[in-house]
Amino acid sequence: MQLTVLSAAYPLVPVSVDTAGGAEQAVAIMDRLLVRAGARSIVMAAEGSSVRGRLIPTPSWSGLIHKEVRAWAAREHRRILKETLRGLKVDVVHFHGLDFHEYLPNDGVPCLATLHLPPAWYPPAIFTGVSQNLRLNCVSANQRASCPASLVPISTVHHGIDVEGFNVRAAKRDYALALGRICPEKGFHFAIGAAKRAGIPLIISGRVFPYEDHQGYFEREIAPRLDRTVRFVGPAGFRKKRRLLSAARCLLLPSTVAETSSLVAMEALACGTPVIAFKSGALPEIVEHGRTGFIVQSESEMADAIGRTNQLEAGNCRKSARERFSAARMAEEYFRIYREMIADHQDPQRTIFSCAASLSEGNKRRRLENRTGRATL
Image (cartoon, rainbow, N blue to C red; front, side, top):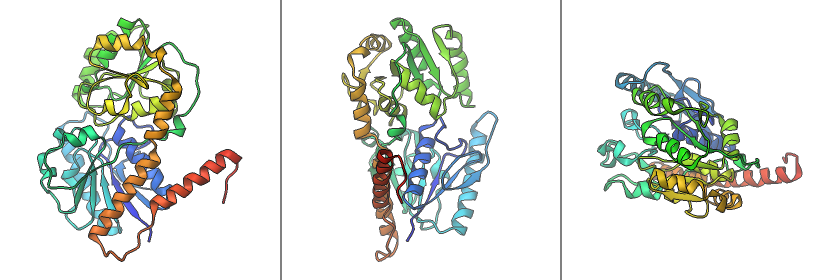
């Protein structure tokens, strides 16, 4: 029987491979791999999302996002999810939003919620049993270790990326790159300071989301410091991001909060570009200090590390990404969890489509296509 997964994204941000948010990119990757594996993928996300499966659109918002807007968006998500589950047979609902608890269904459908942000950012009730059908997932060992004692089962599936899609060769240029959401906790002002100390041009790329604190941060800390050596180039879709990452001397990640993971760090390594990151959360799990980048603890240490990136080999970065951060590995681990959850809630005699096996076969077929230059049937 075909597996059907409904992925519920955060209400206010469209899902696509070009979206700046890591959670939205994770939804887009899983949607693509579910379809590739022969499963049925349904994505509930903001209007304007781009998915391979079926999109259930929820209202978008173009103005400033404040508390009342977030509450309205959660109510719309709850209403649309309830209607969708009433009309469609769904095996698993996979939540990715910070506010998932506000639209968690009450019926018996198995629900998996991936925690993309620090556990302390979620209400404590999610760990004490808001629903007997709920299972939680962390995206790094550091994040899992910071979770409180939980009555709800918690698994750990590390993020994955399209490693081969980022495996490009480009001539290195003499600039450092800071890429991601432009907001206070990402510490872009430290990247500016480090680049100026190191005497290297800095390119900043990312989206300033319509939150008051994000826009205020950009206006106070970033815009006044832009000049000929510090450039802001706006949001980067997949192709632009790959081009920037491939040509950069290094990627700077001066996060001031405990990062639960970092897709952009994985993408940089897949491009053969070392990463210099603060010792924040899961970043030391991704960056191998002295081999694929440097873990530092201050702006001055980041500046010093920029000067030592010529000691690192691009090949080691690519190898690390290939061996550790593939999207196929992430998908297979999620497929295993889906099967376990279904077995817990439904007739154990029911046969579920083997997504992992199908995905592995699909990967073999694509490798053959790459070698021969033609499709195989």
